[in-house]
Image 1: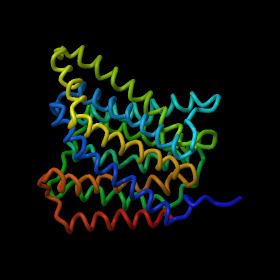
Image 2: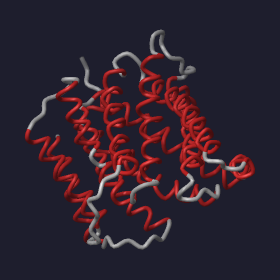
Image 3: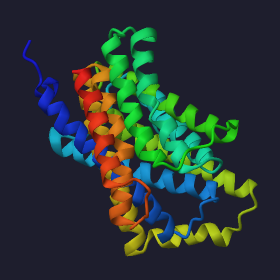
Length: 315
């Protein structure tokens, strides 16, 4: 059987770098989106609603891109709905629900470090629970080295408190677990359904669930209708639609390509690149938001070198 080009190491490298760079660019994009939609850092319900809009549109874009690529409308195979439902709950709903809740109760630095643990969790789940690959010392060492790179670029010499709360750090960790399980499930489900189909429909379903959850959250929190209408009105402005479509495009392209990589490669070989996302996030936030960061160029370079070495060990 002829090997797919996506199984070649150089192609995995190119596509995975593209995906993580896009996700890293989403960090400043989301912050800009909050400014455009007048969403405060503590408005968790509105943040979840914003995420719901973003991912629903991401699903629509993934459907369009996939339909053009395959030259026919993307329609799930008979029996694929359970796969779509599981991914919608894990990859979109639970991952981002817990992430936004946790982020409201902890720092961005701690969230980035905890999120980076998804590479470890995905490896353990794939190797020990689903038996999709072997857990080797080389893979573990590669993960540890990559994780050190993420910690280095986030700590920036400022240190981090080691306190723990269920609503903060606990929620962020649950977000990483949901993402790790989704990565393993994509690997399994892509044997029966095209990753583009899975991405498109799970995004749309997950986006609707997130939006409804954020709406209920705001209603229970006593947020006035006028405040929520601001989001609806802003969505139909050029700046509002522009930033949402940009973020939707990032998700549609990155997750669809990521799903293709997971289909043809071991989970650890792909997810190890996830360590690059927070590094790109720091770099792009400094560029596009002019954020002052304690991470000097030397620290960023060292972090990239550590992450890169960790990636090489997985090959």
